[in-house]
Amino acid sequence: MATRRVVEIFSAGCGVCEEAVSMVQRLACPSCDIRVLDMGDASIASRARDLGIKTVPAVVVDGELASCCRGAGPTEEALRQAGIGQPL
Image 1: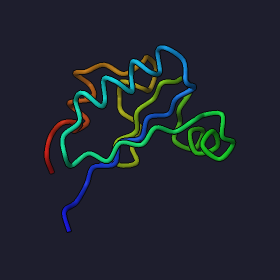
Image 2: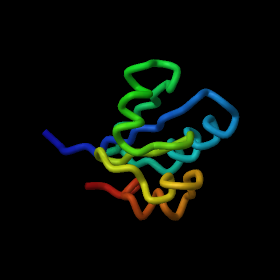
Image 3: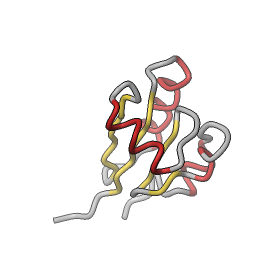
C-alpha cells in the first residue's frame, strides 16, 4: 500500500478559502489526500485551535500547520515547500 500525504484545508467557505482550496487542488499530486474541513463544525474548530490555527484558510500537511498559515494565508511557494505536489 502506497503512503499518501494528507493535506487538510481548514475553511470557512468564503471566497478566499475557496481560492485556497483551488490552489491546493491544482498543486496536488496523485499521492496527496486532500480534505476540506468546515470550521463551522465544532470538532473541526477545536482541532484547528489545537493545531494553532488563528486564521482561515489554513493548510495542514501531514498534521503540521504549513508555515505560510501561521500568520498570513497560504502561498504557492510555501505549499510546495510543505510537500504538496511532490510524490512521496
